[in-house]
Amino acid sequence: MKKYLPAFLFIISLTLLLTCKKAANTHVFYLNGNYMGIQKAKTIKFYLKKDQKNWVYSAGKDFSSKEPIEGAFYFNGNYMGIQQGKTVKFFKTDPSGAWNYSPGKDFTSPETFDGIFAFNGNPMGVWRGKTIKFYDTNQLGTWANSTVKDFIADSNIDGAFHLTRNYMGVREGRTVKFYVVGPHGNWVYIPGIDFNSADDVENVFWLKAGALATVKDNVIKFYSLNQQRKWTYNAGDDFNF
Image (cartoon, rainbow, N blue to C red; front, side, top):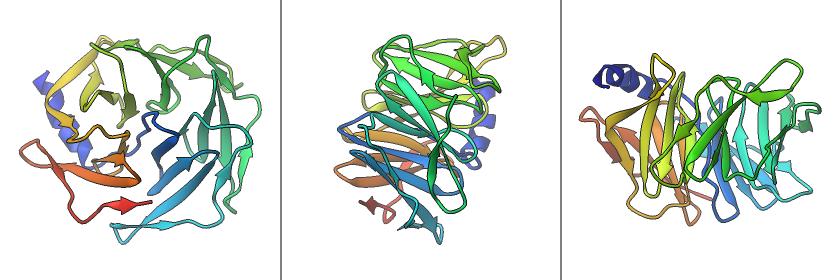
């Protein structure tokens, strides 16, 4: 397992993406291009990171839904996925910042699920209880079981997100553990770099440049992995919304 650590630590400083944990009608997730989406009720507002530190509201890019939003995540390119019940619908943003429904691409799960995230390009990971199942889509927008193997945790999964390539973070309670797809397609745990939140936070998600973020009581806190492979709180970077 140690052979995966060098690659992982390198990725920590370069990678992007995340998704969000389902919680109390608020979802926070990272998008490509230094944007962060914050969803409350039926509206998602977007914030752009300026000067490597400050998050600035991006006016004119709000996404509003007529139906309740149960989950939201960045998918690919200019696409975002919106969960409503067993169905995920995809929306694409245009240069003006408007969001438009993309017909023919809906994903409908055969059963209810707890959360969903994009994984390594095309696949999506859908978790329920202790298990994450993966699905792929083709050019016609049809979804089917992915070649990515199921992931089974020791206890119920509270959140999951993609880092880059075949790396994934899985949250169980206050702990996030990291895994990589091994040479035989099996999931391999990467020891020594677990992230443990000090509080029972609502969300944990992944950002570009190897940072983790936690969400609690409308405050986002950021953490980075240091050279000793310990997660350290980035004091002064909190974002209140």
